[in-house]
Length: 254
Length: 260
Image (cartoon, rainbow over all chains, first blue to last red; front, side):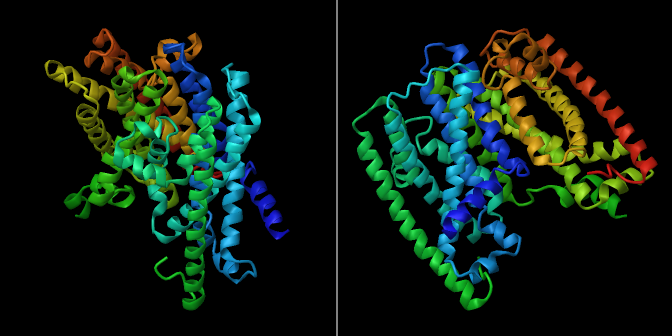
């Protein structure tokens, strides 16, 4: 029940209009990318827009998860509330996980808005043949994004000045995960890295669900499995961080 | 003595410029632009085809330079405000404009590097053929473009003092500029009123001239450069008026924008 309340409070906090930066990522960024797609479509009219509506949504979702989940733990450190979380009767892992899940759920607003903007402002055709399958792949995507957010939260708190490097992670991940260009078109070494990233598989499944490709189920299963591996690894790392903080009374190297 | 030895601009650079190590400079002035160009090249080639990559990379080299200039200016004003030295600059007997221009040398040099490095990156990564016969025109274009960007950035940074969230303001201005200035597609595709606005922005004419120099579009380059220069002069005049107004208001109220 606590987790549910935490989730609701996180959603209320991040969708609060006082968080102007997050409003930009959620509401304005998908509009910006769709505008670029719209005018590129004027250059060549025969392009399929559904793939790019989804791409615009994925770019905004990933941006939001990167900035919000990445800062979820370090912002607690800055506001001096991390020690309260450590002292809380709930495990740190559960707290971070609920934050990253809520961030991924909120990121869905970008996807919904992308579809709304695409349909009613830009009049793009959205060729989702089977909404239930599409929704299933989006659910797995939310799970993968939550796990990625969890990893980001750990990485950001472990490195000083990690915020300076946020922008350096943003675009390469979009390029490597197959949002714009299929992973199979990347060089071999990049393809290898790409397939180790949990979102790659779920993004692949989302694209495949648009085409009703039978490979979609394989991609979905791999996406869940890869995400679970990272989830387990994150669990042990967060436990270790928690133990270090409890033993030393400070964040040490973190 | 200290000012004589190290120079006002150098002291200002040490005080508020973000990238003071070689590692950070390489990361943010070479790697980050490469990622930016790759991203938009991938985006455009996936939407309309790889034959448009050079067209888009050229546009984004100019846009990234503008982004560098405007972020530098905004940060300069923001840091000055945070450390309380903006009021001191205004209160000093030296002209505020002169102070700003001396400080502007850092963003100007930084953006010049980004622009030149962008063209080199474009050549090696995306096959942009350097127009050796038009080196002089390219140099004139670079100077004019950086001048108009600087004039615009001065207004942009001054207005940022009025807004509650400079980061949001920065992102919106950059996003709108990216769409309107034709970095990724020709401004001819914009609806009439939007194209008129685009023509008044500092980048639009330069990007077209740049594409003309690199033979990607057939434009008369001289008129475009003249337009860009006029736009730069226009923004400079507006920024002078704005700075004079800020200075007078600050002296009268004894503070800069008390409500912020």
